[in-house]
Length: 132
Image (cartoon, rainbow, N blue to C red):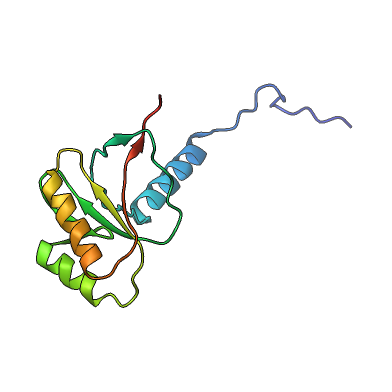
């Protein structure tokens, strides 16, 4: 006995709408529940130098922005707080000064002079490498 089916293999179709809805809802769920971590970025334009070298050591980074704000390892500080924290640091690690090219030279030199005054032997100034 032969049974004849009313549907042929060519007429069968799979509805994709429920699967697309599920994927879209999963995407929205993961987007809304994920944590976005924004790290503060300090915008500075470093001066260029031909003879610059790469410093690979663990250093204390002092950043001076063009609007004369001071940062110690990406933490905003005043000039007085900066000097106090440098004095209190027991380890005399090397210091890297990242000064914007628009900062007056007297600001950068005063920080450099203060670091040497409290006994920090290695003070570096950050620059971008210029190609010849």
